[in-house]
Image (cartoon, rainbow, N blue to C red; front, side, top):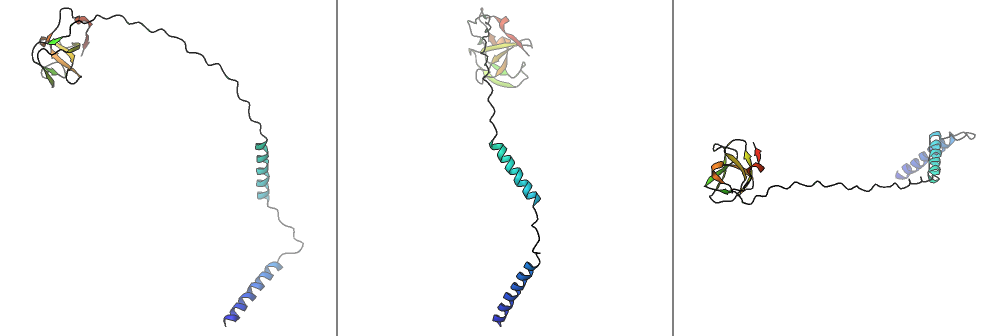
Length: 158
């Protein structure tokens, strides 16, 4: 039984193979693949033109201008402070002019401070906080200046 099935399958494949060959006429000319031929010709043309392309000549070097010297402005001499201001009594250092402002730190008597400016509110000076380095305000009566200290050199800070 299995032998008969195998013979039948081979017979069927043989008939299909012969019938497929029989449909082609003997004098038929092969068809031309227009798209494939055009693509092949374009590829050949691009490769030929690329290989024969001449590299461009580099541009001639340009002259780079040298930097010119510019004068550095001279600074006017400032009046030297010979004595550093000192705190004359224990006081608070505030984040703005007035005792109603936030207290930043307390400064003790005889502490030397850097005066940065005069407050726009009368009676207050702006100093650099000796502990934190930030700006803070102290009352005028808590500072002691040397006689040669020039208050006109200080700027007014709002």
